[in-house]
Amino acid sequence: MESEKTQIKNAANQLEKSVDNAASNEQQQPARKSRKLRPFAVMAS
Image 1: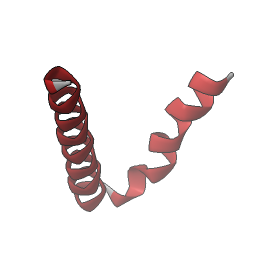
Image 2: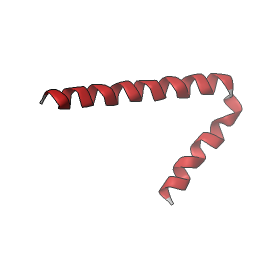
Image 3: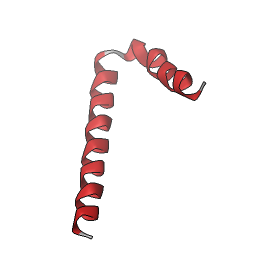
């Protein structure tokens, strides 16, 4: 039970970090939005 809680906390922290990174990346390079969407299309195919 305790490990489950820490796993959830770790996942939330990672998610927050990636959101922060995405936000800062977008501020630095607004022209790169289309490139960011491409990896998802590659993963789906």
